[in-house]
Amino acid sequence: MNPRLNPFEAARKAMGSWLTYSQNAAADGLETRLVHLVKIRASQLNGCANCLNMHTQEARKDGESEQRLHVLAAWHDAPFFSDRERAALAWTDALTLLPLKGAPDDATYARLAAQFSEEEQVKLTLVINAINGWNRLATGFRLFQPDIAAARAGAAVA
Picture 1 (cartoon, rainbow, N blue to C red):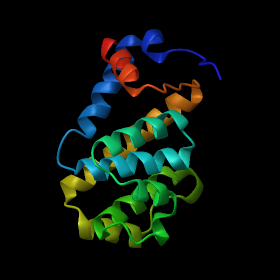
Picture 2 (picture 1 turned 180 degrees about the horizontal axis):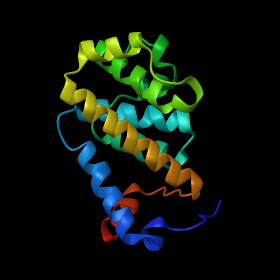
Picture 3 (picture 1 turned 180 degrees about the vertical axis):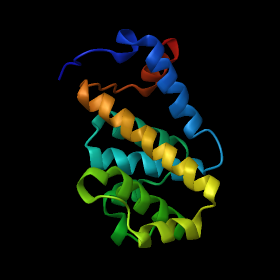
């Protein structure tokens, strides 16, 4: 599958701003492994091969277990996730599937609010928003970079 275009070449300034936004969304305040799980889960739901490849590699590098990565698609039924992670994954599912299921229900939000401060809720929502945006860019333009170091280098040049 060939890319349709390179967004970093086609809209350098806009993509630079988008890259800065998405990096800042995940910059601090949330656990690295939690952020990886959220990015992978949203990418699973959106069918984004590029982001799945990138974020599973990064998660492994940061110490995430193969077992948890393998069962993430069925996190509801897997015993390997903490209550905090489950709340984040439920929120990720709700926001990623927003067009199909409508606004998150009160139970999903209550679960989130029980595990995350208001500031963390906003940061988590921004991470979810950013990865959903990247998923749409990558799938829409058929982007796939098997070498994440090269992908990072290309984005840094933009």
